[in-house]
Length: 221
Image (tube, rainbow, N blue to C red; front, side):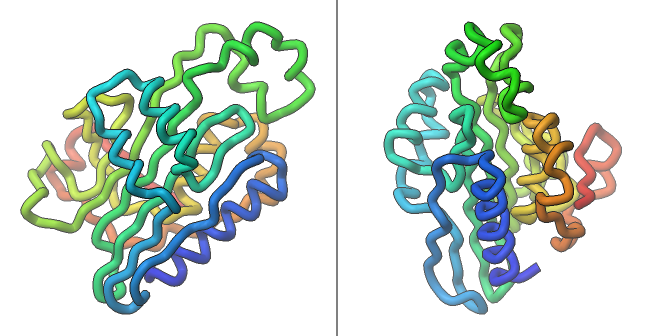
């Protein structure tokens, strides 16, 4: 999958979530460079993204990114969704795709009857929920790759430094969007599934045979 199609998918996903009233704040992607050469798809104020790697409380990370408006999509419950892709000679060489749920869900959970009629909130009003960030990272840099321990494409859950679950390939924007909606907003996803755009997986597989011997993520659409 090339840079232009990746950008189209991200714009399409953002437009769909706004149209379905699943997002009330958004920043359409910023781009730098030329699609067939060196090209980056990111978000304005991207310099603040480094906050996600700081050794500070998750709530501090979330609020810094939120206040800087360093996100592509902000869901109605406050979750931040960010996309960053880099391409070299037309091929993806790096991406970081993040889902950062709001650490402050008490106002939803303390008055659940106010939100029961709105599908987007049905999956977040339980008091036993523990919000945690997830991130799908990819790098084609062979110097960073360590088989099993640092796969080319991997999933990190929470802020655990060495949590790198192998993923079969890089993720397209619609694949990541579908993953987030299906798993964290399932009630809304099932209601609007016909209106949420999807595409078959379009990036080449990067997972190794050895990485497939341990728990890993296989992507579909």
